[in-house]
Image 1: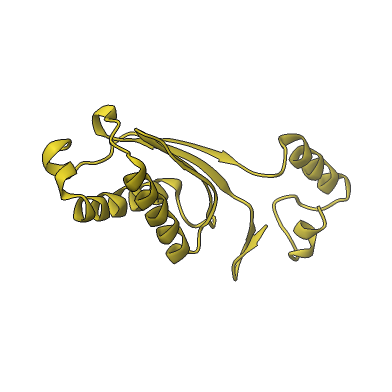
Image 2 (image 1 turned 90 degrees about the vertical axis):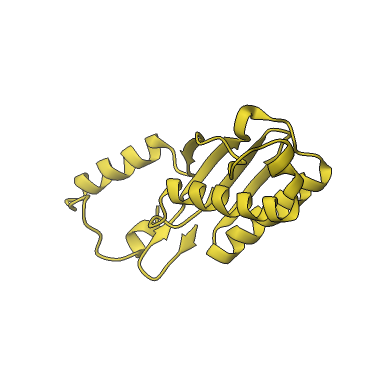
Length: 147
């Protein structure tokens, strides 16, 4: 579980994106560079990488971020920053494999994952109404931490 000044959260995203034209350009040097860059970006944003795998034509990222960060923003930042840095370090890729400024396909997959099952949430909500509490309000963070 993570904490901010106004929230307790556990929001994890599985994000996958692939290279433009699904070109398999990731050699060992480029894979390591991308791994390092993605981790650096996440650290600078205070996001937690739970798993990361750089494949020959796509990236698998399992990441935790605060609730005020939209998953689309995570994708835009990761794809945008890595594109710029990859083309700076490996300019031959832009000329040889990709034309323009597009390393990544515009599409991506995102799924959300957490530690609490739907059944647990239903039980909590049912229990709240049985105790006479309004389930849409919370008098303190203790209510969340006790479940």
